Image (cartoon, rainbow, N blue to C red; front, side, top):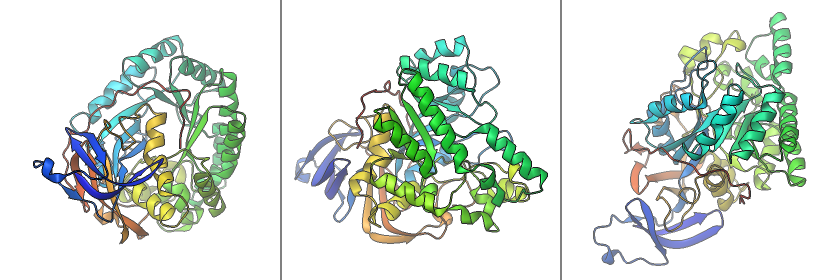
Length: 463
C-alpha cells in the first residue's frame, strides 16, 4: 500500500492512496484504510511523487557491433535500468548472420535476456535484408511472437536501399507493425569520412564533422516521403538530434501523416564542445552531439508536444579498454554511450525542475507514450486499476550529484558525471516488488518477464 503520495499521470495529478495486490494495481482512492489490509506493506510517500515506471524503448544490451561488444548485458543493463526508474525496456537487437531470418535474432536475444533480465522486456525486430521470405515472416512475428515494431537502418553494414525500405514499410503497415528507423545518409557520411581520413583529420572532433545534421535530416525527410508512398505507413524516428529533422516531421504531421519521434537526454543536455576534451571518445555516438542551438530546439519540441518519447540509445563500451585506445582515429572507435540509469533523473532535473516541461509531460515522454506506441498500454505506462504495479517514487525536494561510482551498470563512466540534479529517485517497484530503494539494488536476475506486445494501433492518441 502506498499512502499520502501525489500520483502523477500524463493526464493530471491527484493526492491518493494505492493498493497493490499480486503485482497489479488493485485500488486507487482518496483514502485506503491500512487496518483493512493488515498484511500489506505500507509505504509512506508523503511529500513524494508517485509515477508510472519508466519505459525505455531504445536500448542495446549485449550487442556486438563488429569492432567491439558492449559491456552491459541483460543483467547489468536492466539492473541499471531499474535503479534509474525504468521498469520496462524494448531492446533494439543487433544484426545476426548474413541472410538470417527475423526469428533467428529473436531467439538469440530471448536467450540473452532469459534468467538475466531484471526489468520486463521486449525487442524490436531487426531487418537486415528484404526478400519474399522476410516479407512473409513479418506477420507471424507480430501475431505469434508479439513483436510489433521493427528497426531498419539507412547506414551501417546492413543498411537498406530505398526500394527495400519501401517494401518493408508497405508490408509492416499491412501486418500491424510500426517501422522504426535510424536515419542518416550513408553515402554522404562515407564520402565526408573518406575525405577527412585522407586529410589526416581523425581526432574525435571530426566525428561530428563526418556526420552533420543535414545527413540525418535528409534521411528523415526521405523516410517520411517513402512512408507516405507506402500507403501512409506509420513511421517512428529514433534518437533525433537536430531541429531541421524536427521541422520535417512537423511538416508531415501538419498533413496528418502518422509519424512519431524520440530524442535522448544526451541530445538535450550535452553538445559538440565535448569533442575537444581529452576524454572526447566517451561521447562518440551516432548521430553525434550537436551545437547548443540544436539542443535548445529539441527542448522547444518537448515542451510543445512535437517530440513523443525520450529514450536513451544505451549502448555502453568501456572507456579505458574500448574507446580511449582509438582516440587518434574516430573511425575505429565504437559508437555509443551508457545512459539507461540516468534518463529519469536527468530529464526530471533538467526538464521538470527547470520548468521546461510539466510533470504530466514528463510522464508522457518517459512512460505513457512509449507504452501506447509499442503495444504495452494499459498493462504498462499508466496508474490505473488493473495495470501492472510498475512505479517510481521521486522526492522533488532532494538534490544529488550524478556520479558513476553510484550507478549499477558495467561501464566505467557516465557522460553526465558531476551533473547537479534536483529531485531524487527514492524507490522503484516492478509489479509490486521493490527492486531499488535509495540507490540500492534489491532485485534479482531473471525477475524480468518477456512482454508479448499488441499490434500497432494506427489511431493511437498520445499526450
